[in-house]
Length: 103
Image (cartoon, rainbow, N blue to C red; front, top):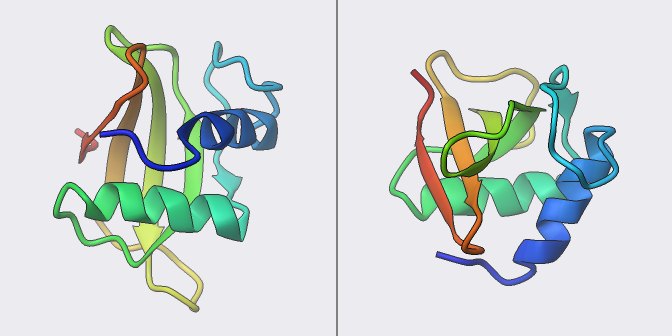
């Protein structure tokens, strides 16, 4: 799947995580901009997972299939994240993405 604004999302997440758009080394967790949070939450929900709001993300080393974010979800409009609500969002090299629970 490729959401509208996918390339802009990749650059936006890269800049927010301090990598200037280049995904290389892991980064500390970053609180997300509301627009990026909403887009990541929609991406995660498109895979039938419960994610009212993407709260934080950390960039992991590039995986076998593409760039990887570790995203945590939580309640919309409230602080905190859910227990066991971490997701691996992989931005694949073919301009698609996958979402799976973080293990």
